[in-house]
Image 1: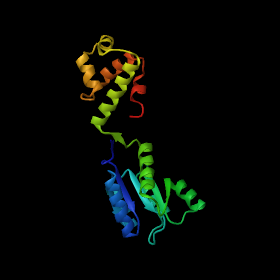
Image 2: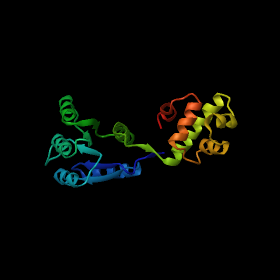
Image 3: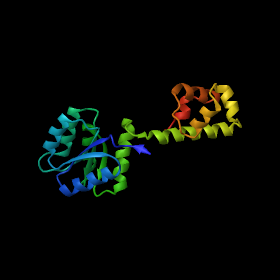
Image 4: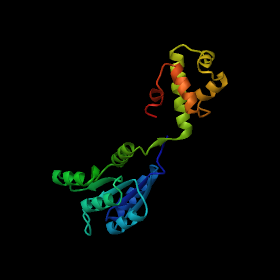
Length: 201
């Protein structure tokens, strides 16, 4: 299960109903959103509290979304800014990208489209990680599958790694988190690079 509760998202849209709907959607999908209908207040807040992602409406009466993005990036250049708009056009898209926007979301959007865009941004930033118990289980499954593919018994793998069969069994079942040292010995004994064993997790 992907862990997202640490990912703070600043939502800026002058329409209160959009803020409420998007805020609830993000909470339901594990994010930690803070919504603002006043872009100036959002910018001032961002100066005091850091956010990894900002979701900004393009057309707002008091402050243009492109300028909001630029000012947010001036506060924290690492912040990933995504723009929402009901009035898409190539020139605007190009300008927002030039100012530091990483994605462009057309309104009205489906819930899954917005979440997919946020997930893409999170992956680019390396923010999404797997829950520890799930990670242990996935690593254990990979080790077991590779061991069985090579027709190795736990005893044979134990002889190669200098780990006990009990330790290896616990790792394969995902019940214990193996140390990097142990994972390196296991992957080496299976003829795999450690990076290959952990790839995509």
